[in-house]
Image (cartoon, rainbow, N blue to C red; front, side, top):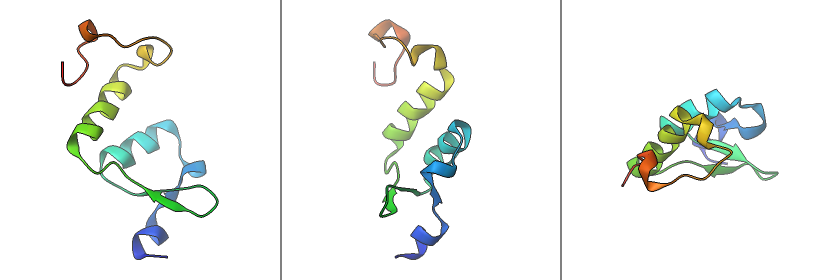
Length: 72
C-alpha cells in the first residue's frame, strides 16, 4: 500500500459534501474491498463535478446544453 493509500479516506466514511471537497481538491479516495485509489486527475473532471455540486436539482433529471454545462 502506498503512502497516499494510508491517508486516503475510504468512500464509505464520506458524506456527499466531503466527497465533493476531496475530489475537487485532488485528494485520493479509497474504494472497494481492496481500497483501490480513485482521484479526478484533470481540471476538466473536477470542473464537471463542481458543476454538479452547484446544480443538485439536475441530479434526478437530464442535463441539456441550455443548462450551461461546462464545455458547452
